[in-house]
Image (tube, rainbow, N blue to C red; front, side, top):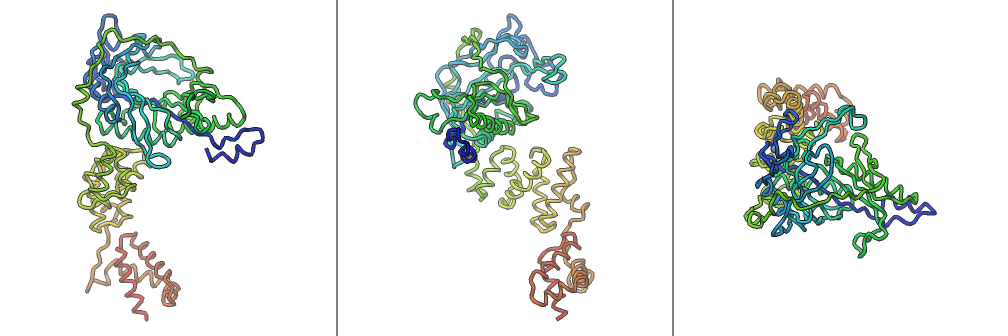
Length: 511
Ligand SMILES: [Zn+2]
């Protein structure tokens, strides 16, 4: 990477690293948003319930129980495969992956091995240098294991509890080719993938623990990856396991880039290893010194028939996906390219925007993509907390001139704070009145002297004789200063056009 090339070059003994490139591949596990588990009828809506209350002989793996495939989960996975431009083979197959771990009650996991549901696709993202195609190796279906709760923390647990409510929840695993070249690209890929899955209606990113990512990362001489016989001269790579947030992926990868570059510069040889991301500290630590290629003894799952899903796949009609919606936002609403990308990058945001766009879609885009999103991020809230009805009313108040832009933002902040604290909020109109933000209407004619803007203007002129003198000497800044004083006195509620006109009138009288 170029940013450290200079540093590397200064070292006398080191080789030149300026031509290195970062190689990243991802394995993403997402929970499919079905109502029931993958092989039994247990409900997947377990998050607020008691541990081990969503279980049955099948998902507990009791002897004699037999799995049955949830057709909806397969259909959801096929939607993903099609949206990712994959090929769906004529036949796919479930396989047993054998290993022992307390969260895996059966002693094996039902997954897919050499016959996955969908293969060889791609997803286009906004890369570092324009549009970029990231190849998808495969998409397969598997069951989620149970959840371990280490009492007293993962490091010093006194004991561990196991909750099988999650056991058997349908997952899809999406594997990319190592086509990503920076942590930022990895983050963009994940954002695009999340948006795609949500548009498909198969995934809910707001559910805790619904996404986990394993990231492979290495730093290799440029061109190494594409050359024939890759693997030779491999400098070793790290597989960072089980990252559970979007931000975490970028953080973990950024940490790894620095760690690996430093090691290479010191002339160390990097070993291929599994690493663990410590979210709270933003670092990765080594899990095992050497990657043990575990022998999972995969074999075809004897309790399930092979899947022939071509007809099911052929019948699937995909909904409008993020790229198509972005194109529509450009043409239908006249959004700027940046706004169109931001607004369509999240299904809820896109739907929210369409509900508030109304007859004035361009200012609405600014309000949603810039103002609202910024205020939400600041409060760690999501757009699903906001009612499009009151938001539309707020935009309307600003449009009609009842509140200024600045006043509108103040109202928005107040309403979001209320929502965050109590779950409900006033109407924008109530808020405008409570905060006294209503724009002052000018009273003309006989009432002129009672007009608050006129009063404030007279006061400002009386209080700042120097500025008045400067104005008469032809200094424009002096006028702007006086406008500022009037705005301050009216707490920003005066219409700028009124202030200009009234001030000019008063200053003219003195000539
Ligand atoms: Zn069950």
